[in-house]
Length: 66
Length: 319
Image (cartoon, rainbow over all chains, first blue to last red; front, side):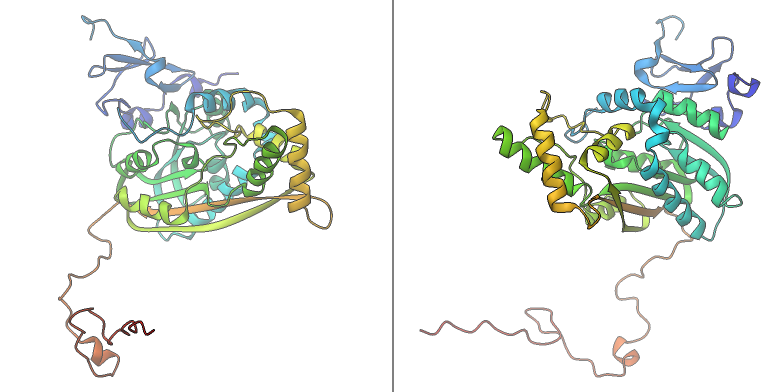
């Protein structure tokens, strides 16, 4: 029972989110549903429209893609 | 990262909340009551809040209650919660943008929110000063922080009953109930986090239960059982729990035989500093004499003690 609103991230939310570790900016990857923190080298997943801003849940970026 | 010495096992707390999330609704009485009182306080403030953060929202109680009680006061809500199941429930129920985030490491850009509400979360954090500081930084100048946390004498009856029973049956006592902040500590923490016009006040909630087991069952359903790092790791004997319930009833039951549990809720208010806020004048900048206002004569201060009246000298010892 996922409504369309539940699977997209609220634009206002994207605008105020920063990396919890570095407080630096995030890049939204809509295809991968990830929020990328270049400074921390982490990609935070977004599931069912809810960004998961926990370092332990984040994917580590490879050196070249970061 | 080095924070203050950790008191709580935060991973265990998250696991527990994750586990009880499906039954939390049946045990959300206390946090719902705290949310109502917090929303009342938000309603008492004259200004409106276009953008609010419900930090550590559990199932979205504060947001739901505030939407109903003070619909015109708050524009948009954003919710954050560290337990994933709670966050999903809150998102479904409120329809508001929600993030999963650690309460001690918030992922928000500075100076965005007009209101940050923290409802029943701070008492379980290891780094309260750090969390308060981050919430203050998330506020726009003249934005309001409203917090509610359990403190003071919360659950002192249970603490006493368990201590006495464990000592009696097992010949020793172990830490059972979380250490709670005092009201004066809470006010000091607000100041330390850089809030203007900090206020902390106590609003006790007395809850009665059929017996101590019902209370412990409720605490489990709330996800709030002992998560101290220094807790005893072996199971408690049945005899100890039975004795604790007996002691609890003997000491803290009312005429009807129901036991009482105290929850001391501290309400915290602080503003993100702004130039428009009232500030004390610089010492020595007064334009009128206090003596004139009081219609009295001014007396010079005692040079040694700074007192307006000579202090009584201690009498010399006479034998």
